[in-house]
Image (cartoon, rainbow, N blue to C red; front, side, top):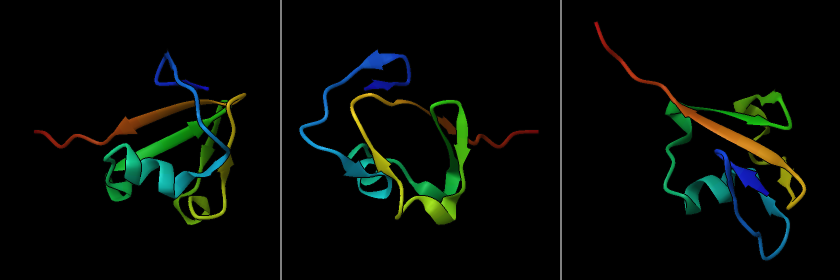
Length: 64
């Protein structure tokens, strides 16, 4: 799959929330786009990702 612009190989299809945990992301401060569609946080536990997917993860940053 393409993850944040880099090719990675998943050993098997995986639930999005588990993938994010494995990669060290805090789901409360990110937005996820899969195949050019924003995934609602309520769907993270139900969304299966595949090697054919393109995913982007964006971190929220505070400032002022």
